[in-house]
Image (tube, rainbow, N blue to C red):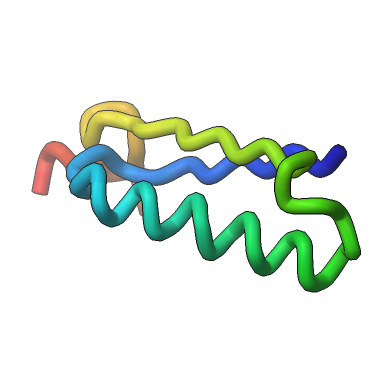
Length: 61
């Protein structure tokens, strides 16, 4: 049973997240041979003040 975690900044629509989960599930199934009903996808959304690049928080830009 594959487990996939996607970490991303908040702000995507429910439609975008639904499409992401569907495509990730399909890709994992196609590449591993796992049945789609056995694939678990977690979406972890972060606020921009919890994410930094180059020493600067995304919320500071």
